[in-house]
Amino acid sequence: MSIPSTKYGLVFFFLIALIGVWLRALYWVSVPLSYNHLVHAHSHVAFQGWVYVTLFLLLIRSFLADGNLKKYRWQFFATIITVLGILVSFAFYGYGLYSITFSTFFQLLNYVFMFCFWKDTRHYLGSSIQWVRVGFAFGVLSSIIPFFIGILSAKGLSGTEIYHAAIFSFLHFQYNGWFLFMIIGLVYKLFEDKWLDFDMRKARKALFFLATGTLFGVCLSYLGMEILPKIYPIAILSIIFKTIGLWYLLFSFPKQWLSIFSSKGWSRKYIFIFLGALILKSLLQTISVFPLAIDLFFNNKYLILAYLHLSLIAMISCLLLALMHHYGWIANTFLSRLGNVFLMMGFVVSEVLLVTGGLGMFYSPIIMLIASGSMAFAVLCLILSPIQNKFSLWKRTNGSL
Image (cartoon, rainbow, N blue to C red; front, side, top):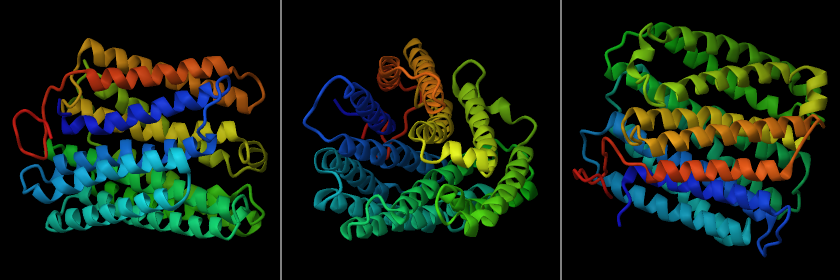
């Protein structure tokens, strides 16, 4: 049975959720696979499988649905195969020849996609495409860092401060730059398609301040390191730029913007979760520059993981799911509603446990395992739920690749 093109991202989401369950189960069960290898597979497929593949389709659906999609078809298939290679190679071998080869091929495919998309949208003048292009710029910047990480590992510098700084930089430019700017661009494209008048002047200012704040904001990832005195002023400056940018972003939205998202389904709920997570993340970044917070947050694996999940699940993933629901890629059925409820329940419970565990108050491995299992079950429900409006790179009415 063929898989609809819009479901591939969810399949990868399900796989990383299963790995998450596996990682939690290692507390009781011993498996031949390395814990660190599974963590690498989990994080890489989260970025390159679930988020990237879904963004790939959403960008084409939003900007190029009426164009010639032939060149994107082979890119899509090659990306799917490559991400599967990344999953297997990292899970079994970790950083090594196979994983580096697949990761390099993925980046080459990513560059080809960026080039083709940029070329095919070069005449587009809307505000939305500017956000996407800035997202591409951050994507290129972040794609260079893994090669630097590989060099550091080869020189035996794993675990050093510069090694951790490189990893933090990669993560920062991925979810605060590449992913975030592209999904905001998709929201603005939705406004443009619905002929909703948003404040373009505020949108441009939001883009400038948020992009500059994100560029400087990499220093926020270094606050717990010895270089703190040198980068502290830049970290403060990034907070100022990001706060101004967030204000311009929120007030650039048209007054009727919520009307385009159905109040009956989950698209509107996910939009509210995204906005709440975006504001909360900004508050946490502001708090993180205070000395007490630096001592508390940095080098605390539970709080760091809670922050990463806030960014990648509550912020990035929820907006992707909102758009998928809006476009009818996930129909509003009992199965999808069940999946959405279990996904949010699992996320909230796991976040609470990570925060209370990080603060030394309470942590339960069994409850965390149940929460992780809840999210895996939830994504499976979304995969099995029917599609309302079908979209395919093949341009067929049955919506299958």
